[in-house]
Amino acid sequence: MIAFDNVAYSYGGAELLSGVTLALQPGSFHFLTGPSGAGKSTFLKLCHGELLATQGTVTLFDRDIRGVNRDGLARMRRRVGMVEQDCRFLDHLPVATNVTLPLSVTGREADPQDLSDLLHWVGLTRHAGALPPQLSGGERQRAALARAIIMSPDLLLADEPTGNLDWDMSLRLLTLLVELNRMGKTILIATHDLHLIRAAKTQVNARVLRIRAGRLELAGADL
Image (tube, rainbow, N blue to C red; front, side):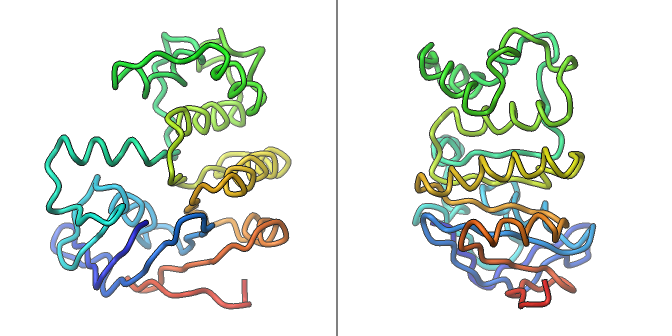
């Protein structure tokens, strides 16, 4: 699904990541951890072509990202859901409309029943008509998750999705992510929260990757 072959990425003349070789298989569940500034967000952006590697090859859905034109990359990205640290909602539009924006961009309309089912699944049915500033932090993250999966992606990337949530809400969001994985979705979560990782490993066969000194390594039992 995603493969990195000797990938490096430099920013401002400094090498942030180097020698990254990795393959994420369909239906797998991965965590990506490491200290702030280690390159977790950069890694996620490399995964879906927002950034291009300065060395090596990134393959997404069996295609070298570097060789895909703009339209082709846009089509590939429709198979990838992204939950970012900054949810980036349009604050003047209600939650339901924000959730369906990815469909609108492609000229499609949301099926009312599908949208209702999705909002119910993330626990936001009664907030469908609310504006984003009226939501709590946990509600915003669940709305961001709903928006990320409205296109039924094969792969979900999440960048510190529980960073601003209390523990109970973090576990609720984790439950949704585990359910998605059990539906066959590939999940990659960047997080510094080792408690969240430990909780997930009791529910799902999660592989933990760690960025240290610009290198990607498989984390051991010390987590």
